[in-house]
Image 1 (tube, one colour):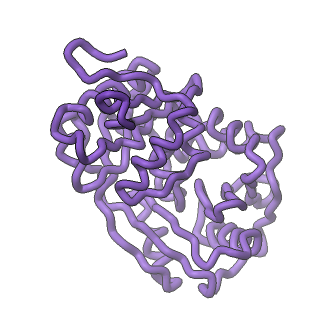
Image 2 (image 1 turned 135 degrees about the horizontal axis):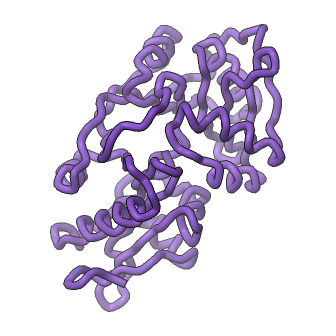
Length: 288
């Protein structure tokens, strides 16, 4: 399926996972197969690929995931041998059209320096400098004694969604349901007086954390301390904070974490109500 005059494009299947993984590795990205499975063959996402000539591998890939009014574009890669032929533009148009047709009024993505010009031609603009953080295990994290922690089971996904939606700006219920069904994932909720004030999603098989949201730095500290306890093999945690969580970045810098300013976050469409200052870690770039 492709637009008239465009490259031959089709929806990806799980059989394409090895080839997509190869494309990600070719540009220095981690594979994150679990994240790829979330955007392939799901009713709330679309992943498209362009086959190389004569069936010789994949020439390109791109994906989009729907979170109600907010959509994320990810996995945008064109193999080096097939660049500058309009493949990336065609894939981006197909993904963006899918998200818009699904009701997304705001599209966001994480751009590399090489991809920025392409996104700008399609109406995306920078939304500020994000903070990429590496938090080493030896950092002293003080737990907030007023915060209680507990695992969240599948029956309480609605509680997570109700907390997450006004802060993230979109409805991630489908993503949370998918993650809850994954045996390598654990959700830890932080509550104060019975009210949720944050949560962390952990991959015990990676190990990694994200998303991680917290209403205050003391809640973030409590969740991060718990994360290190639950991930004994993790020597550090990587966190990507959105541009508007400058207080969170300053707090992490004060703890001794290395902060790398990064201006690759781009968006198209009107801003949605959300609370970026509560976001301390994304899921992964392709999923937001």
